[in-house]
Image (cartoon, rainbow, N blue to C red; front, side, top):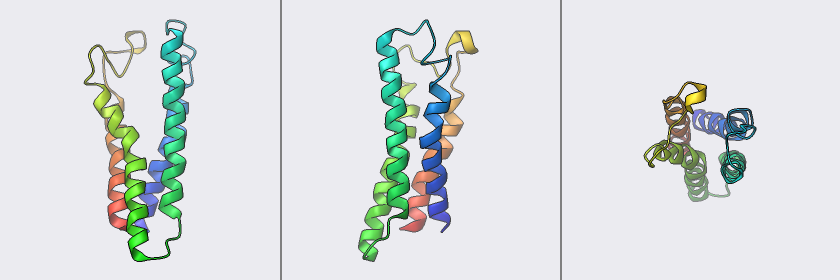
Length: 129
């Protein structure tokens, strides 16, 4: 049950995190952001929410067999961690920062949260499988 609880924390982070962090004055309503950047922001928000619902679905789906339960947990591990791992990798691209200068950057304040929630997804799925 601890594993499913961790996967649920991860799913909630995915469902609520990006909309809260990105649908505001620092991102979507930032007049300095060009339309194409806002498009990708909308894409990222939508992806996060979809992955969150998939994570919760597979974490709580009732399996018919133990083998199917392991498979559901593997799917939950992927859907629950891929967004966070991509966020951690994004800082390696040229010219990126986790925080714009107008809001206190440079910096990468998301790193601990992304690491913690990716760990919830991976550890949660491992504990349940």
